[in-house]
Amino acid sequence: MLEYTDYLKIFIALLAVVDPLAAMPIIFSMTEGDKTSDLKEISRTVVLSVTTVLLVALYLGQEVLKFFGISLNSFRVSGGILLMLMSLSMLQGKISETVRNEEEAKEGETRQRAVVPISIPLLAGPGAISTVILYAHKGNGLQHYFMISLDIIAVAAILWCVLRATPWLTERLSQTAINIVIRLMGLILLALAVEFIAGGLKGLFPKLA
Image (tube, rainbow, N blue to C red; front, side, top):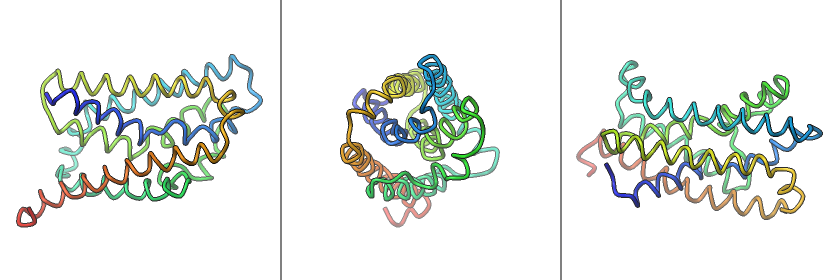
């Protein structure tokens, strides 16, 4: 088990990569005109989907890597590059195409879109899944996995609050304010990406250490 401050860092990293506020304009456009009861149902579906995906990544992600013969160091580098691409888009106040594209946004009915593309890959996308798997490997034991599970649940709780408050927040927050938050989250992700890439390269090429 890691230090409690480490689990706080994991929580902040997950919150940055899931980034509910960055997704808020898209969620609002997809649910605009829905009744309050519909928005409540969509919020519940999104939160359950995101939580399930991240918990599955936490407990089974490393086994999937082993099955495909992918080393953790290689995954660190690839995951770091993915997070770097996401962060560079966020620093420009945009949502990366690695998270969501226009074709995915047009597919499906509102209920289906609560799962695809809002939950996957907009919120629980490759970046979030990679982050969970990489942090899971930093420790071992039931307590370690339990603490990361709590981090995931805490992020899901914040996500639910943002989704439920989307109409209210959209009316009161300017696009400039939203972009500032997106850029701050992007800066955190960029630092996280550099850490993952550096750790992966040291593992792949020990002489670099």
